[in-house]
Image 1 (cartoon, rainbow, N blue to C red):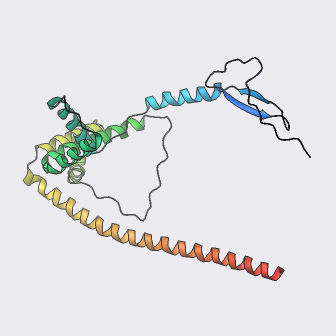
Image 2: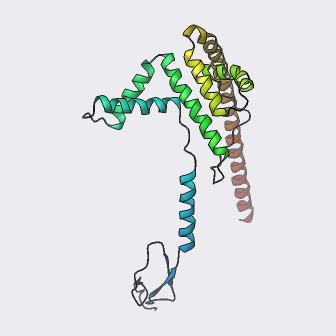
Image 3: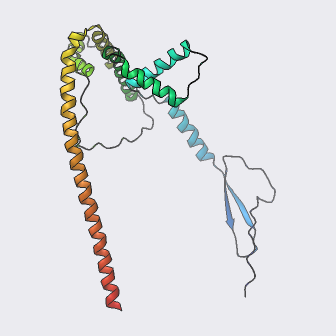
Length: 247
């Protein structure tokens, strides 16, 4: 009868030297019962250098653009702090107030934040063209999925982009977007109405196409699940028949 299994003791190296935090320790059991575990130090200098270089690259990476609602939220938060510096609201309560305020403002005021979001997006795209660091792999878009319709402001920019670019060939994308934003802000509600109507029609068409696409997607998904289930049942039946024949 073999002797009872002793508890393995995990110990540092014999000199009890303190090991730096970046180092990695590999504890290797060198035998059977009662054997001490020796410590093998694997220096993490290369991993540490790679991590530091990655952090430096991330610091140089352009800041991602945000939506029109985020621009409004940041502006609303700054105003709220100025007007009520001694009032503290939790994140949930503040988000609720901000959402209610966003729904109550006029389309003309929302257009200002939409213009800021377009400018921010153009800025980010231009800076990413000159960035050569690591980039996140974007999720592949389904080619059969309908594309989101442009907003009224974007339709206005599309109509005036060629004219502004021909009049100012040296302008960058950001400069053209800024000029378009100023022109849009100067327009009256009557002048903006045709673009808003076009955007509303495109949104209605997009919703219809999206509904059809989702129904087709769910149908394909159900067919694949049923096919996989039937295939599994076939394997189980074949295995059962083989077992019966062997008996």
